[in-house]
Image (tube, rainbow, N blue to C red; front, side, top):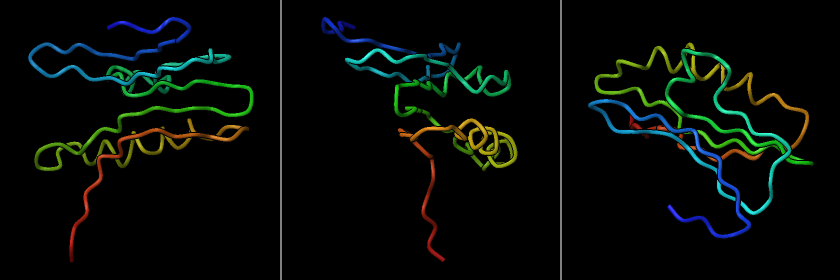
Length: 109
């Protein structure tokens, strides 16, 4: 990948054997004050799903939220572990900009 001069790139990628790779990235022209990868919780962070960048007046979160999988096998993980952990991570003292793929579906009743 070629990055234009003056741009910064932050990647949180995981290369999995016998599965697709996954991860998130931030590309920009302004260097953040700090960048963190993941939630700081090993059970979540081994999937490369979150990059958080801190700027002067806001935080920027880019996340690829886990889906529930075939047969909803990961629904419990998503509801009881991931979502509450992400919610705690999002409690910051500045404006929060959130880039995400929520992996939600619409079900007609």
